[in-house]
Amino acid sequence: MQPDPTQPNTEATLSVRGLKKVYQTDGGDVEAVRNLTFDLRAGELACLVGPSGSGKTTLLKCISGLMAPTEGEVLLDGKRVTGPPKKMAVVFQEYGRSLFPWMRVRDNVELPLKNQGVPKGERDRLVDDALEAVGLSHVPRSYPWQLSGGMQQRVAIARAIAYQPEVLLMDEPFAAVDAQTRADLEDLIRVVWKKLGVTVLFVTHDIDESVYLGERVIILSSSPTVIQEDIQIDLPADRDQLNTRSLPRFTELRHHVYEQIQLAKKGHRPAAASAGETPVKGQRAG
Amino acid sequence: MRTARNIGYILGLPVLLVLVWWVSTLGSVNFFVPKPADLVETFGEVWFGDRFFSDVLPSLGRLVVGVAVAILIGVVGGVLIGSVRWLRSLLEPTLEFFRAIPPPVLVPVLMLLMGITDSMKVMVIISGCVWPVLLNTIEGVRAVDPVLSDSAHTYGISGWARVRYLVLPSASPQIMAGVRQSLSLGLILMVISEMFASSSGLGFTIVQFQRSFAIPEMWSGIVVLGLLGVAMSFIFQWAERNILRWYHGQKEVENAA
Image (cartoon, rainbow over all chains, first blue to last red; front, top):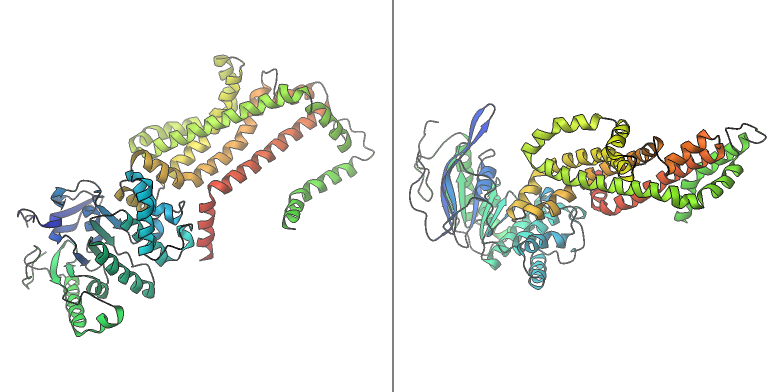
């Protein structure tokens, strides 16, 4: 299948066009991502969910400019991404390995700004606000490893917020924290997203999480990855762990996404691989 | 109370050893084994006088300069070689060769090339001390966590900022391990570089005493070297504790979990 040749959507903040990634290994080529095309509007909160091994991390690395795609391109505000863009921040799953253990919490959050040459006064304000936003104003002098896993991930989120990105990428950020902390952090993301109006692409393997968090859920097929389905989540904007999760609509959506993931695992692939189209059910070879 | 106990631990064994020494040399007339009291007396006479300025200080100076330059070369070279893959492939086999050469054999060669000078002695110290730091730094730089590296990359931390905020701190535990080895090597090489052909320095003085059968004086020189080693080890431990506070803390947390 050829990459979608359509012109990038000019309204899109983030535009992924015909992305393909093939890893060259000693044992031969491995096609991790086959053909992905989707757009994120400014201020959108989209979740990317797929079965394990569906190339989610590969996709995220290509979007964040850490890895060059084999084919296709990623556009941020219409400009092609060739390296990590200034307007993007990434929160990784491994919180313990993404913060500098030799720096205190505050220095960790401040470092990217310092490196950008942001003046001291403004820097202090941004760092204070970010720590406040994630509820960590009380531990600026601690080292990351002195904090619990959930708090460490909050520090990583604070660092991302302080950086004032246009697009916030999150790579299964809560996969390694316990369930209760996870619920808190999910709500934190919703709050931060609403307050800052940032575009968020949240990668997860957790179906409930994707439906609870997202305004939109992009379901990936199994590897080599294409888009299985792209659905809008029509849940109320104000969400909370108890009520939203007990809404009949939540259950319906969750059910639907779950079904799609199961299909994806069985090797079902949509006939059309471009975003936004209603997938045509049908088996496709390969 | 705690300090008192710590001091007790530090001094306990030395005091015991001196006691054993004192008891076993009571009534002894062995020319080669002096009594503790004689040694203390000689020690004062020999080392708290002109010799302190003519031999001890120059030796120490060369040691400090040699080790410092070796650390600098080792860290700078290690960061470069560790970061640039083709440089590493190019240099690593050759480095193994040079590292395998015992530095003392370089003394005669360097003596011919540079003369019997201070710089020759410093050069001997550098040529031995540079390897542990260099090789450890290369390893440390290569072992930078890929996730941490990606994090820094996405926040636009590159070039010198990357070295300063990511590479150096991340490699610092290995670098310090290399420095520790270098310090003890440095002391050995300082003595050796002065034993061959020299007119001053601790190594020279000790050999001189030995050849003129000034046995208590010779022993007192060996004690000076030992004390020097202890002092260096304490300074190193203090520096290490401060530089690697985060590292030890993190390890403690990991072990407790």
